[in-house]
Length: 269
Image 1 (cartoon, rainbow, N blue to C red):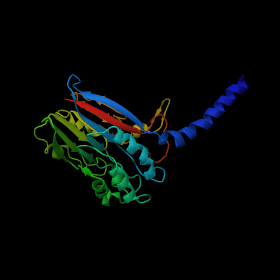
Image 2: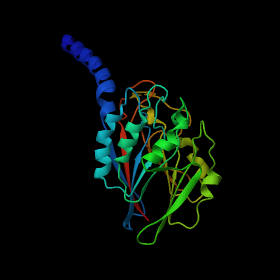
Image 3: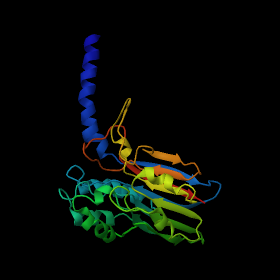
Image 4: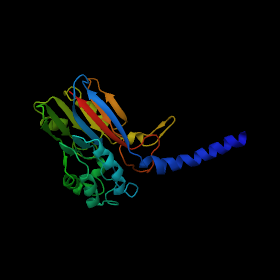
């Protein structure tokens, strides 16, 4: 009996690294959420991606699965909440990235914000051009109002990166006029508290990787992603914040208990 237990422990110890480095990082789990007043009809479908962090460990062809899943959702809007690159100086492949991101289709538009890795390794010289070439509008303390077919107005805004950029909530909200629903994008989730009291309905963030590796009694947290780490939160004024756990990895190219995520929001308002 003891031999069987020891054998089981050995096999488990061998399996965990294989799963963490080879299996879970290659997943792409779709999480769907209905938000807003669900007594009202669905007005908008938004798909969120974050932290792709292309690298030798997350080559551009890994996006093929993500593209298929995103397009299957037939989203109205696709948003990307930063960190396209992991280390641009070591792995860039700009045209391949443009080609892949261009395959993602949205009926209304595609929007992005800067992440801290998009400023490092020389990435700041090309990030906005790459995203624009793939038909993403990069919102840097800016926003725009979208008119839906039924006449309702949706504001979508975005902050500059809060670690290496110059974020300004006031600048971003200055673009906001009349609206029925307001969505704000930020890379780092812990800055979301700055939107409390601004009549913002939804904040979308990334950066945390959800901890990337979750073990019993151990949770890795990132700067400006210590309070809000993964999933859905309701702030003190009922503003909702969602922290996407990202697609790629950084530093240690493993995931354990935090699979790569595609978030789908079906908004009612």
